[in-house]
Amino acid sequence: MLSVAFTSTADACRFHWRWRVHNPPPTVIITSPGDGEIISGLVTVNFTAIDNNRIRWYQILIDGVIRSWSTSYEWDTTSESEGTHTITCRAMDRAWKWGVASIDVTVDNLDAFKVMSYNIEASGTNPDWKQVVKEENPDILVLVETGTWDDNGNYTLNQVVNEFNTYFLDELPYVGFCAQNIQYSTSGAAILSRLPVVDFNQIPIVTLDDSTDYVVTHDFVEAVVTVDGVDVHIFGSHLKAMSGEINEQRREWETEGIINYMDSLGDVPIMYMGDLNSFSPDDTGDLAPLGDLGYGPMTMKLYPEDPIYGQYSSTVHNFTDVFRTLNPTEIGYSYGHQDPQYNSRIDFIVVNSFFEDKLINSTVGDTATADTGSDHYCVDVFITRSSSYEPDPIPPVQVTGLSATTISMSQIDLSWDANTEPDMSHYRVYRDGVLIAQIIGNSYSDVGLDPLTSYTYEVSAVDTTINEGLKSDPATAMTEEGGDPDLVVINEFLPDPNTLYSEEWVEFYNPQSLAVDLSGFILDDITTGGTDPYSIAPGT
Image (cartoon, rainbow, N blue to C red; front, side, top):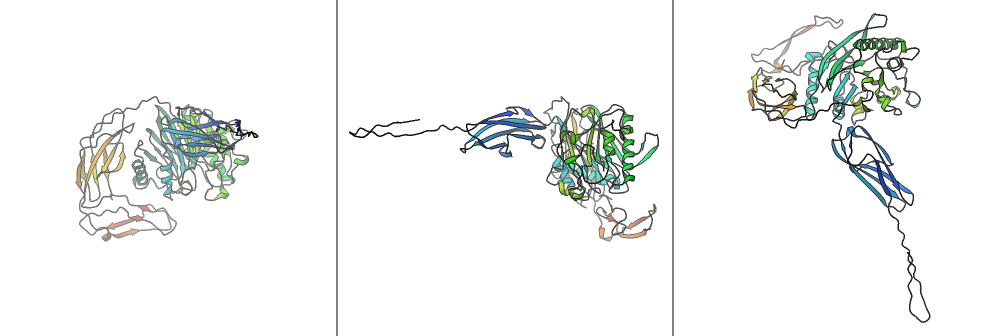
């Protein structure tokens, strides 16, 4: 704008010049997602910015936290809380002016479930693996190397399931199954599921194409899990380890045999996952692994037209490598973070065509504790559900009939009347006001208690929408008096350290008249090597 001022003097006229430049901030338009949209899974946030001058900076913020310095951001909503979130997009011009646009969206991933595969290394040698699971929060979990979990009547399996169920209060409880009669801590597999498991199988022998039986290195496990009324066959796999021609051949035979087993099931939904100790033919160039474990097993799975391995492929199913399909350019190494000379992707989740249009997103080892939890990273996938179920806001009725019965100096048994609601899920057990377990049935044994101590219990019912009913009327019981465990002695033993002999045994002698709880006692044959230590279960 030009302004002119005149001064009334006889000989002078002055001009005053003033310039005003109109320089508005950039105009920001969020192109996706839409304001008020309900979103799930992996969502692309895009925006444009228009200005008379050049743009200096771009920013995308989610709930006030900067997520990107560009005009596009791939937002994994599965790691966010359910509900409303604010997306803010900003652009700054050369005049240091910000243009801003914001929208609100609703994250709703309740129509998806999460599946995860994890080799926990020698039956969970580093307890951080459990923190990884807590960070990931899968609905179905396949664990590899759970060889000691079946000892003492599935003691470790039950302990792990109870710990997770007590931690995840706002989730349906897990039920757990593991391979039995496993000799080594680096073998075995387990499956934990929040969805109903209608069958569990252990597969030590598979049939090859020439009809011969082949004994696998590590038994496969199979759980039949009901998802939205459909039975899904979920397989846990741990193929033979190490490089070399013989080991590669063993892995290929194991894969050939399990493919034949899957074909024998017919056209059913299948998920196959675990530590395959081999590479994918799709991992080439910048994605190529280090090492020489071979490509046979995954080539059999993915490429029936392959001139070498295609003859062993399925004749019923078409399989998809979940992570590579959803992340075509991301390396995704699942092994080698503790020893980079072995950087490779050897842990996989593979699904058949039933799930090919239901895959949302997949990640590898992306939580805070992933580096220490195991020598492997976990692999996960979110899968769309097709359920149209509308949750019922009405909680179950109050549990009735709770009784507490003293069994010993360290055990009290509980029982109560079963609830009959059609959407009934599980029960929560409280000891002295503190949640100690979430269980499916209507009885519970509380073990590892202190002698001559009174405990008060309450039980509540929880439905499939995680509505919790009123706690039952309390029931109280006192444990029996106990003896001194320090007075227990080894009375006799028959060792033979040079051979594995079924008649090796140890006899304890308790010279007291009172019972002694041996929980916490550990039997170990030698200082290093040999079989794994045997932990005596609580209540023994």
